[in-house]
Length: 161
Image (tube, rainbow, N blue to C red; front, side, top):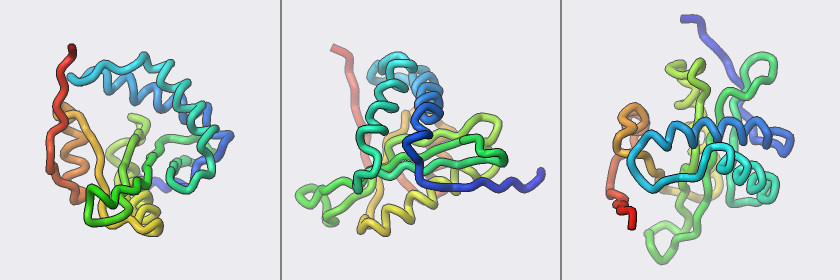
C-alpha cells in the first residue's frame, strides 16, 4: 500500500457545502443502526451546513477537515468543548460529535489522524476527558475507538413511544 498524506486543517465557511454532503452520507449510514430515528440525510446535511455557518469561529466547536492531494475533502471530525463542572471532575469535557472518512480513504490511518488531531485541540482548550456516542451495532467504529484508547462506560437507552 502506498503511503498517503493528507492536510488536516480547521474547516472554513467555504467547506460547508462539502461537509454537508459528507454529513448526509454519515446520516445515511447511521439510519442502518437501531436507535432514535433520524431525519433524512439531506435534511440533516442542510441543518448541519446552516449550523456550521452560524457557529463558525465560536470557541467551543472544533471542526477539522482532511484534504487529499488536489484539495478534495475526504474526511472530517467535529468536537465540542462542554462546560460540565457540575457533572464531572473536570470543568471542561470534550465531546466528539461526528466523524466521517470517505470509504475510499478508510483503513489508511486517516480516521486515527483526525481523532488524534482533534484530541490535541481539545487538550489545548483545557479538556482532560473526551466522550462520544457510537451505535452498539457499529462494530467497526466501536473497535476503532477502542484501539484509540476509548472505552465504554455507559449505555444510552432508547425506546420509541
